Length: 343
Ligand code: ASP
Image 1 (cartoon, rainbow, N blue to C red):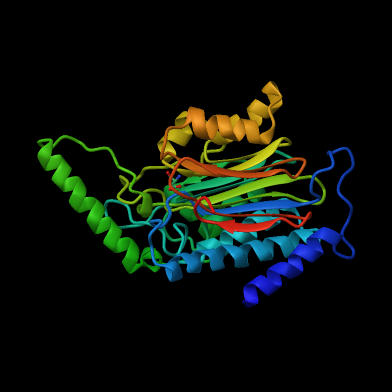
Image 2: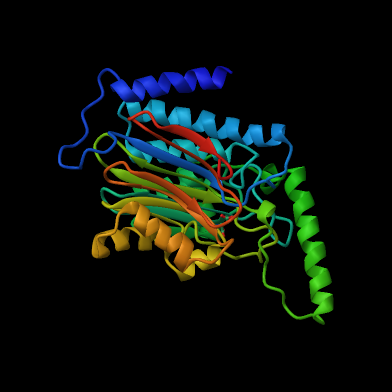
């Protein structure tokens, strides 16, 4: 297949190092010169979904991963690559971010996004934006052009106007598939409420309703970055903000690790999941893998979700406690893999 041929090219490019690529910063271990992980969320298709449907996701992940590899091999900065990959996913209706994001309980969309540059700790987030085509681009502008870290709602929209970013009607985000899921979630919720005599029912997390997209990178200079964008949870209360735009919860990067999460946002906020990974490495001397396993399999509960992470030596990991997670991992040593479930 065309896509696999191009992938093979990147393997070779990664292994031999592309002409003109600056060498990795010395003193950062003998890991990969550059490394990248991407995800399309921990809320995946059912394992028994038709093979063609699964293949659509694999193709989208593979295409995005190849672009990431190409840019890193030519020496692009981690933060630029993270933003570019997330923009791609935001424009792809398969994923719960930008076009194709889930509906809230009012049948509208409120989008969250965050980006962080681990080499400077600079970060920017937006929450509850409704008419911004690419929330991650606006988050980047919050990071670059303001003194602040997080803009929300109307203030974020006004900032978007000021910055002249591309706007869309809220209905641009709509897709039939997400509408059907909302109808189902609201119907189930109404039945549960009736059974519980009108008591409030906390949002459930059916596997197939959610997701988030994200990218983490270690570039050739040894810099780390992370970016995450989401529509949140289907049928969420309007005004609800998840973990993705909360620095340290759903997205984080510093000198130790870059992390992007997907799952039930409230749990990731309670446990400051993304920052916990680098804190375990910084204060506890844990490896990336040890830190990620501890948080995903011990701090979080089954079906809470998962995350992708990279450390300063270019080690990569993707772990989840849900049924699957759309993900891809690649590095300059020739690793290139895309998965949804275990294999
Ligand atoms: N973490 C996202 C949120 O809670 C949703 C997801 O990743 O499925 O907003």
